[in-house]
Figure 1 (cartoon, rainbow, N blue to C red):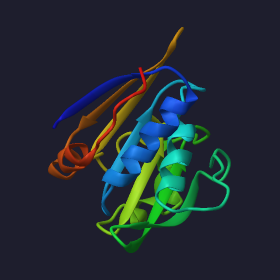
Figure 2 (figure 1 turned 90 degrees about the horizontal axis):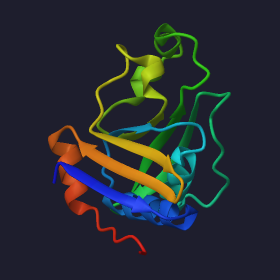
Figure 3 (figure 1 turned 180 degrees about the vertical axis):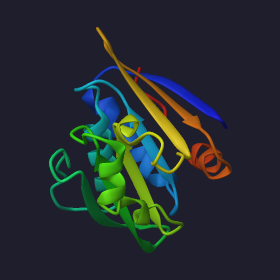
Figure 4 (figure 1 turned 135 degrees about the vertical axis):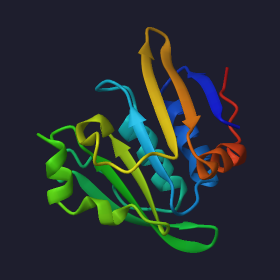
Length: 161
C-alpha cells in the first residue's frame, strides 16, 4: 500500500491511529509529521510511543528539538527519536546538533516540522499529513520507500465512524 487516507472525528481517533501505527513500525523508519499547530502531531506521537511500550511522560520536544525513547518492537528494544523542529532557525542547526546520526537502520525517527530542515534532513519513508476540519481531522499517510510501503501494509486501522 502506498497511500492511506482517513478521517478522525476526535482525539480518541488520533490516539487509536497512533496505537495502530506503533504496531506497524520497524527499525529504520523515518516518518515526517505535517500539520498546523494543534493538528495532532504530538498527540499521534504520544499514542504511538505509549502503544510501543513507553510508560513515562511524553513531552513535546519543542525546546530540546529531540527526545529519545526506548520502546519494544518485535520483542526487541528500539530507540525512537521524536523531533520537533518548529523552533529551528535554519537547516544548518539540524546539522550542527548532530541529529543526522540518529537516522540509521536501528532507529525510528518521527519528525514534526520537517520543512525547517529541508535539504539536510534524510528522506522520509512515510509522510503523515494532519489537517484540521470543523468536524475533526483529515489524515493522509503516504509511503515513499519500500520500507514505508511495508509499514503501511502492516497498518490495521478502522476509524470509529
